[in-house]
Length: 149
Picture (cartoon, rainbow, N blue to C red):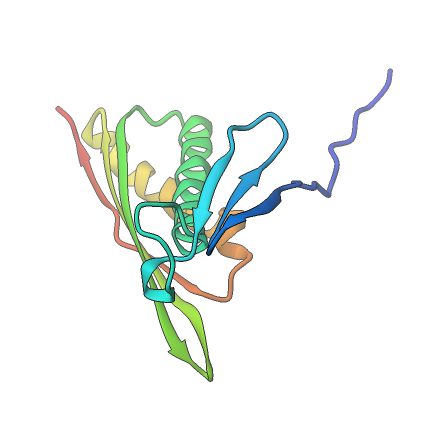
């Protein structure tokens, strides 16, 4: 019998190509292109995804997906998950850096018996989110979990 070992290392290849002014296009095999730009506060362009938005989005999405894995393992009856996130970019220690990302998830579970388990699953997700764990930035969460009965 052959035993398959899961890899301990993964790579994600992304290309960015300058298009004009302070704009470019992100490309990754098998995915739609994504136009990116500097934000207006750094003499960029309004209305486009920025590296700053993508960083906050990565924390938000990773936390949700990690939570969903914990929910599946725990048998929690999830009705909905919706999360707003705010990243704070500040001039600190001589350079601009994100000093904080705050997540404000609103989670609805099927019944009151799922609430405590959903809180535990969310704490697990906070500690296991690989994007958050890769940042120096503090990530705070303020979950609201309720039952949908």
